[in-house]
Length: 304
Ligand code: GLU
Image (cartoon, rainbow, N blue to C red; front, side, top):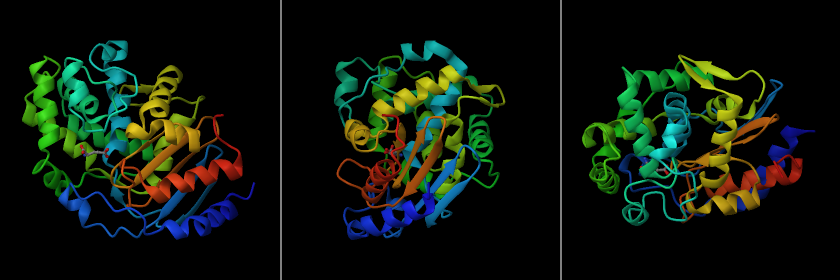
């Protein structure tokens, strides 16, 4: 298969949509990003890789960080995690409060903000130095020691995260946060602020595509069973209230973030990451969704 030619053909085909949508601006630091950028990186499990555009530019991974915090929390708590967080699609916006209220403070899944705020709480309770542990976990997964938090983006988000604060207080009210609300919000925003490139993300997510050689770092073991479960949640809940549409169009487990990144995996074959900051109304990258839809169409390599 000529993957490089496929990526080039895809880029030509999606160019007409290059100026549709706009970048997230509810976090002031994200509003300053040049919206007209595009990069894609394909990493095959046999070690080959193919790329195009700004695939080595770093961007804010935002909600993609939730996959990393889920992997750590699941390794710490095992199935007890599901007493505090559900595993069903929410059908509501990623920062919605409504469902959390009528479901008595148990978030529907780990990839909506409420669920990821509980994940942050689990890490704070069980890790001695959660900030350091988290970033080292991501660096090791991606094989890049230069990956880091952006304190600028984290501070920018924390200065205006009124909805997330409301979610955190509601969780606290229902006894589903063990730590101080401000401490949890600070760590949550910091994890969202991590900056990675498409290359870093594709490299990191190979661990979720691989079924032999399970990844292990400092006691976090991505066993075959855990990888299966994390992929299942990416498939059903990885794209806000557009998870069904992504499944329908692309047919891969994956996760998006409001920084415009999307990463997806094809078990036993590859991990692919794409970045373009302009989002659709549901918070997913327009060029990114189209690129991945065409990729699985042209290669016929999806899980279905
Ligand atoms: N930090 C963002 C927020 O909490 C993450 C949202 C996202 O990427 O979905 O609003």
